[in-house]
Length: 143
Image (cartoon, rainbow, N blue to C red; front, side, top):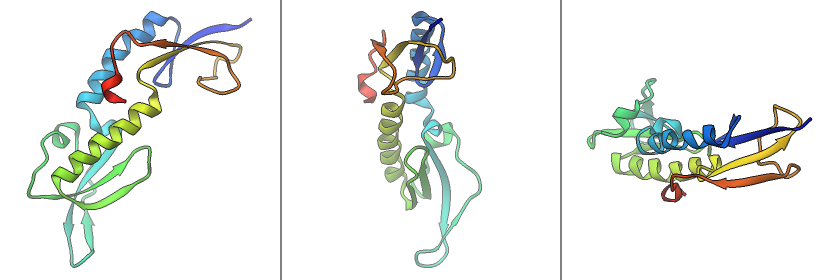
């Protein structure tokens, strides 16, 4: 017997309503929680081209209020890119560009409805049929 599942941002739900209820939380995450898609640490130059990286990853609050006098290391959670010696403005630019990658990867504007026999399967997969349902909240600003 097939099981109907609704998938939003990689998580399974039993109803479309449950999945739709997650969209506002995703919007809040995309607006306020950059540590979901970027890891940033402070760095100090130790000679030309040599950087000492702090072991502490900055928090969301710290990322939203970077110190313009410091230098940073930024790493994308999904891309694998690591950049050293960035200014605060360069980090803000990376936060925006990595957020786009993150939002696209999670397909934040779509809920997937599928009829699957394997409870562990998460669409979209090319070998499964699924129906795309637009989110009730417009997420196009993030894509």
